[in-house]
Image (cartoon, helix red, strand yellow):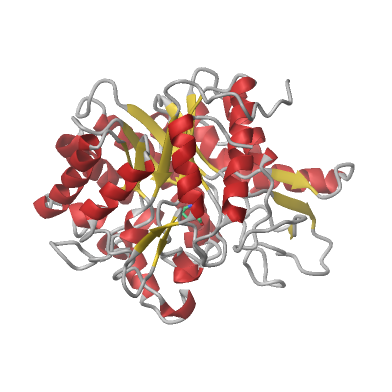
Length: 467
Ligand code: IFM
């Protein structure tokens, strides 16, 4: 293993410099042109769920400012744009006939990207489940996975000729565990057993959607899933209890997805850890084969690391996790784990900055899945509202140096998507946290590229990491 950061070596030919967004975080226009309500509409309109009562009703008004935003991407010289398609725009209740106006919007987006020489990378699901499906059980029931395959077929049929890359799900860990265990994301459920059911049904949805896409989309299309895998460190590496805490979080945060997706099996230790919560009888014969479909690419979303130790029953058990200090653990099978605040520095989210975690994750995925290419489908940082944002430039530069290091050490990393193109609706934090390369004034909707946008544009042009 080399340790060079290769700062002045150009990124490989064809390496994609992109930026990412998600539908509910930027589009607004939540009740226009036939869009139905999603779980995030319901959640954000429920008092107390989102900071300041913010909602995605208007967000960045991207739905009405599509051409302006496409021109902005062209000015930044992006090679690729990662966006998500809002399921409730395509099927307002999550089932039945397609809403043509919804499809037309994404056709305009994709055509606008191609006209500007920007490769579209479409994510089918970035958390905005149609509310009607939630009312019928949401990710707790397998019918939602089946409905997702029908949705994927509709979208693949409509856009399959012009989209280069398809990502099925964004961060299913958040959908399953933040949505159904800790409840800080929509639909706000706090039931660990439902979280595990949701994890399985998300995996199943991914596999069924891939089967639906194949044959409907271009033969050379790439297929991926974007995972926010955890880089977990033991607080006391010599302590067996802390190493077991790492194992438990690795099972619940990572292998609950990578096991079925890439090896067609749930890890035995996860099943044992969670035996008091569920008997896993919701996994039916044939499901794991359906989940374990060939993929071309693994999408890696990375922001920070986690540190854990064995919980001794005292002190703050959830440091730096955004959860109540003394609350019972929401994590099934990991009730004995304490989260310890990582050393700083931190971003505005309170997340520690450790670029080596990205390297470790890329190398792990490379080792465990030889032959698959990798994309960094999200990486970026929230900082206080400012157009001059040297901290963000530093964050991006240091993480991109670790991407180069992983490439130098053999990982087939094909691209990097900065999170995010625009300041946007940061889920339960509302508009308070700004991740954009481009500042958005949420009163006027004026877009102002930050210094980091100019820096990133230069990188996309020169392909060399400056200083
Ligand atoms: O804004 C989110 C995004 O929707 C999913 N990944 C993490 C980002 C920052 O929290």
